[in-house]
Length: 181
Ligand code: S3P
Image 1 (spheres, rainbow, N blue to C red):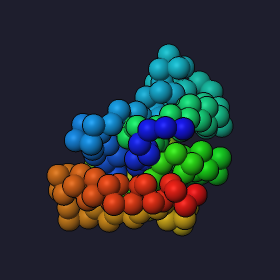
Image 2 (cartoon, rainbow, N blue to C red):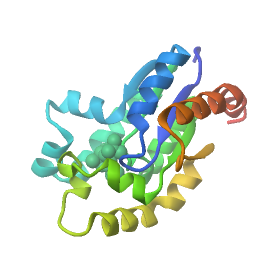
Image 3 (cartoon, helix red, strand yellow):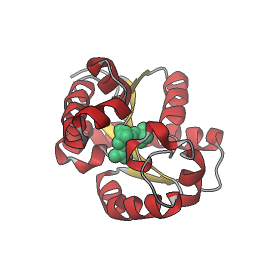
């Protein structure tokens, strides 16, 4: 497949994947794609509605389909939903055409950024938001780390610094990473 490798952002809800992804796409001259938005467009429903009407398993299968479509093209920055790494098939597909960069945000930053949690069904339940984030993050951390080509700790960095570091990692590593797959 011709084209430049994809730049794929993975990480927990509220880690900045969409904002950072849009800016990187603009600055690198790549298309921007978001797996959650594709799921929503294809379903004609929001993620919250899909969870409420059909449940998480159904959402995960829609997510798999959307990821498969996106990973079949190049020249894109792809922002993924926070749970995309839970299905190995997604990681395999994304790695075949892209460099996976994990935006590793602190639980404090995540709680702050997801405080209006109504559109995020997995955080919308009862309970202390901090405990909820910590627990899910604890369950997923190893999976993010295993999937990632590059880990970027974002604590203490502003958005512009994150964008610069992501772009830099992509420009330095994407071609070599893909050639060795
Ligand atoms: C999810 C993260 C969400 C969305 C869905 C499930 C998760 O995406 O895909 O609510 O399992 O972490 P964001 O990471 O963009 O919020």
